[in-house]
Length: 227
Image (cartoon, rainbow, N blue to C red; front, side, top):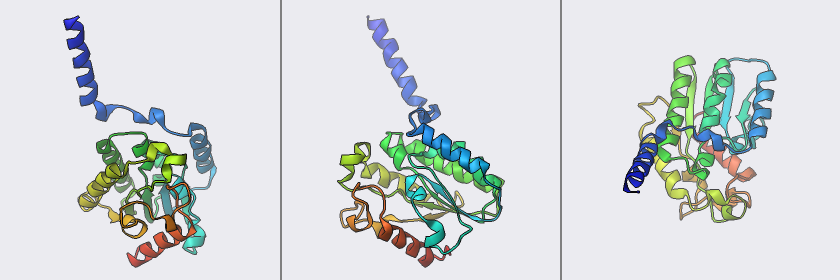
């Protein structure tokens, strides 16, 4: 029995130590929807040099062509996607050699309890692959937005996770220059005094943005001279 417990402990230790090699995308949300969106992307024409927004539902639900008055902008958001999903479909983006790439990803990883170190590593890998294969692309990485308390009703997995969100954002901000991307801190303009997603910019679910939220986002991008 003692030997069995020792082996069990070693097994747990090995799993923990090798966690960065595990494939957490096996718990990716909405697999069928992901496959449907990817198929649509692949069926479209390859137009190079465009602006691409890449991410999850917060990206997908943004009407970027209207918000930025540019009918050529490409939306590569997939609701419920995580960093593993973006890595798996990144070639679709790289093939298009975008002039600018706006990345907004990570809240679903947080909701799935994927370790923060792995989330940061994946985002850096996304950037590294784009820099290597599309060197003329200007890359912008957005902060992961916090949630507010309403999120526990519709998306309980994302509730009370703002500490993890803040850690990932801190790493992205600190290492932006060495990883050759521009960090966009959305939280400064969309958070309330308690560091939660401000209700005036959010839908009632406490996670997604309303129209005012998207308009404020675009205003920040223009202030940062991204457009």
